[in-house]
Length: 330
Image (tube, rainbow, N blue to C red):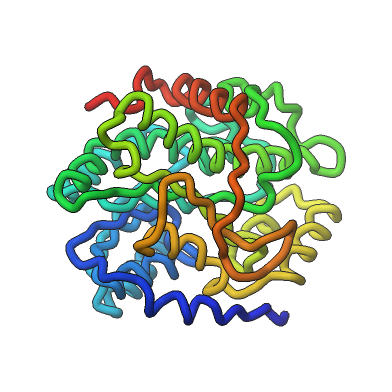
């Protein structure tokens, strides 16, 4: 398969400032965009905290970074378990005595068959959004500490072109995913759940920015809430979808369409690199290729604000993760 190459990343890299003395935490960085982002941050001098499920692949990714002389550390984190996320938060607190400069909520799964997690939530919504919401809340004191020490911190969410396709609905965030109707005719249900989770990523970005301004105004613009989407990118995400079971002809058709127009991982990670590393970013920035289903350079995209969706994702994510106050010190 030929992959569209994008040379803009090579022009971006020399413009990035040193990240020496900074700490970056990244979920889902055993391969693909997460691993490349970890390598880029490490090459700029950052300490990299790799939040992954324990596996041979996560161990290999850690070895890869250390072989490149990156100051990397593994923190076990299974996003399908809120208890595992809370344990990862505890480890983050021990690993970041000087604060956390960047939390990149990168990990995700795509269009896997219907499954309820141990927490009673839809697997895709919990993995892609709700656990990241909880992780971001738990990391808040560390982000505040980084602002005090170095002037700013960032929460970076990873959305997708799949975010388009409908308004956010409360039932996908609720603790009763049986009402979602399973995978449905032709397996479209799994793709609908993916769309909802990726829309939640973007709406969380906006709602976090507003919540900081409302509840922590002294940190507005200092803890920056940003988002990126990769465009169609050749990573292991598509292969995992096909290997997850319950795959029909429509799933294969959709995945093949994605792969056919995909660009390289180096191109796909460009938006994340800008959001996590570039100097000239502002809270609410959203980076990615222009257009629907297109590969291309990551540019600053127009805002996609939706007041109703933003209020919904904030209130229902608090409820489903058991939080009463996102900013409470625990």
